[in-house]
Amino acid sequence: MRNVKKILWEALFIILIPVYSFGSPKIEIKEPWVREVPPVSPVTAVYMVIENEGNEDDRLIDVSTEAASQAEIHDTLIDEKGIAKMQRFESMDIPSGKGVELKPGGSHVMLIGLKKALKAGDKIELNLKFEKSGIIKIQAQVK
Ligand SMILES: [Cu+2]
Image (cartoon, protein in one colour):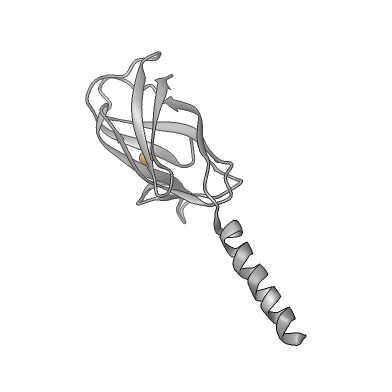
């Protein structure tokens, strides 16, 4: 009897594992926008809310755009003197059920080497590459 119970429990376990491990992130990008900068500025920042309604974490691993020669993932950190400094990261975690807000004074996508001046109202296209969700194309408005 003991053995039968054990086998039943094991069978149940084997059935349940695939059900519970079948998770996936569900990424949605909300309110993307680009900061308008003077035409002489070669850099600007892109902000947005990255939501993950899925049941698995994801990670932003790359950003590219035709509008700039380089796009980097940055965060703003306060150093020991209280001065805000930007730091580059190779990736950004997008936890399941939470998501991340990229906002002024915090994390952002830095565009370096703007190919043309961006005026308020212009739109640029960005490719956000996620570890599990793949590439998501978005349009961000300059404002
Ligand atoms: Cu930056």
